Length: 247
Image (cartoon, rainbow, N blue to C red):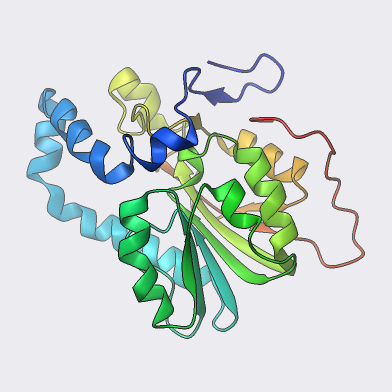
């Protein structure tokens, strides 16, 4: 569906948090999605050349390393089953999948933090305001049922001047326009939101966060890389008071 007010694209029949925690947990749907995609010749070629993904993963790691300063508390929203937070920081995570949270929590505790097994909305409520120096939303926000609500909560949990690094599929990219319904960014029912640079920036603005894009050229990559920043204390954030699902 596309919002007639802001043009934001989202999944109309989205699963609730309970389903995402158990029956539709990522580790369970990944195998089904891989089987579905292999029916198409282009995806068979994709899976035959999976070695190239190490370059993409390396780019993701560089993106995080370059935009998450050393030291302080860092939150990984949708952390999965491992610790992706760089060394030298106190890692905290929120993970809705019970299985993945159980796997990652001991790893986080070894470095002074822990993982909360909950939806992002409930998990963020368990931390004090102005608690985090940085946050990581890498391949997460497209999965979230209430993305604007999460950004608003994150704005409160970040310290003034704190940042969140964001990676989401780019619905406005050239690849999506060429591939149509076979675009790699479509993943049902896991991907509930389909961002463009414009809609991500607007949603961040309404949540009180400034948005800076890190892609070298717009539209060439299937993903958007951005850094959201909480203004320093005393600045007018421009946050709107109404909380909606999307924008």
